[in-house]
Amino acid sequence: MKKNYPGYILLILVVIASLALLAAPGRDRNKTVFGNDTQAKLRKVSGTVRKGDVLSRLLERNKLHVAELKRVTEAADGVYDLGKLCSGRPYSMTIDDEDRLNSLTYWIDDDTYLSLSRDGESLNAVVEKVEYERRQLSFDGVIKDSLAASLGPGRDAALLALDLSDIFAWDIDFTTDLRESDTFRIVVEGLFVGNTFKKFGNILSAEFVNDGRRYMAYRYEVKGSADYYDAAGRPLRRAFLKAPLNFRRISSSYTGRRLHPILKVHRPHRGIDYVASAGTPVSALGDGVIDFAGHRGDYGNLVIVRHRNGYSTWYGHLSRITEGIRKGARVAQGDVIGRVGSTGLATGPHLHFEMRVAGRPVNPASVRPVREESLEAGHRTRFNKFVASMDRRLEETEVTNGTLIRSMLAAVERE
Image (cartoon, rainbow, N blue to C red; front, top):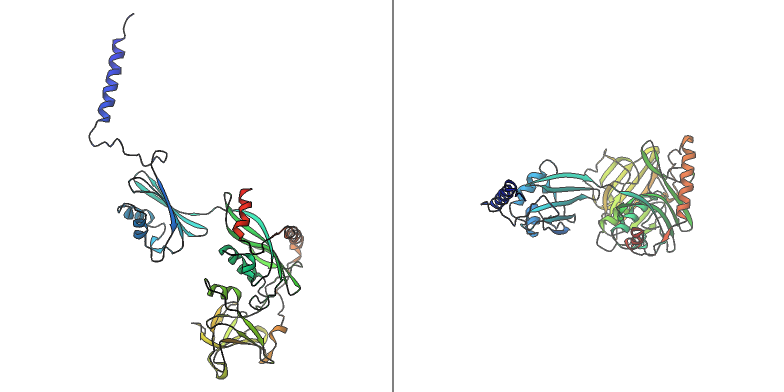
């Protein structure tokens, strides 16, 4: 048989050329091609930004190469200021076996994150919005000790309690009006990424039974603006909040500490005394203009807010008045105007609150400001259908009884 000498010669030349390339000086045969995630040996780290952390300290703690600080800073320039790292915010990284950054995710807030990823020898940075899947969840419970405690421990429950108190703030004083055995039911959006619960969204509907009286709320959008209405389509929002010591403001002030109990004492003809710890935030009951802010006799530090239709509200014995609160300044409902104190004629820290009409004191509990206008007729059919669907969901609520909400949601995540 005739041998194919040219073919053998060509094969031998290819082998020699391949060996020459592999033996070329300067080539590291053990070096991983960084852009190939399937070959790179990556370690993953995650944590939260600590108080006082700066970017260099964060990278050093996770044993990254010192040159990475410049690369990360240059990549993020014009995308996000990494000098604004906030303590408590989570982050995660992947790092190669040469201590170089492959990727970094830093959560700017609950809905936005900075993503850095390596492309060859450079890093690319982009700020992304989280794409949530919204699911309807429902809970109910019985008041024991406080609203937050009845929803269970944890940040999710605390934020849900604050949102619920905001909805009924025109009807219920959550600092003093709650009773043991009051009940609530909630339908709320659960925001998921994949099948993992992240946080709660908007409360869609709620029922609260306080001291035997039933209150309902339904979230409905008109011309791009959402608000809460009762079953008859009347807005819950009114000119005045139920109380000047706002549950959200107070709860936020006592983060990590036991909430001081608030006592409400009615004084004949002269309003209400709220016994509270010094420094408790005091909120304006409604929109208005500051008529007086300063020291006045037995009232001590006093703020008077003038409202429409001849109403005014008085806030006395304040330990201090909020900066910017002066005669002629405008305030919005819920704005903090001062802090509880014991200035003037006071035996201990408390807020002395009065409401006056045309200069004459009236009992604040007897004043029922007119609601804003009800939904227009064109919305009634759609609104009624929404109310009916929410009422069905409220009947399907799951009892919390102070159970950790995230534990209850574990079953939802497995579905």
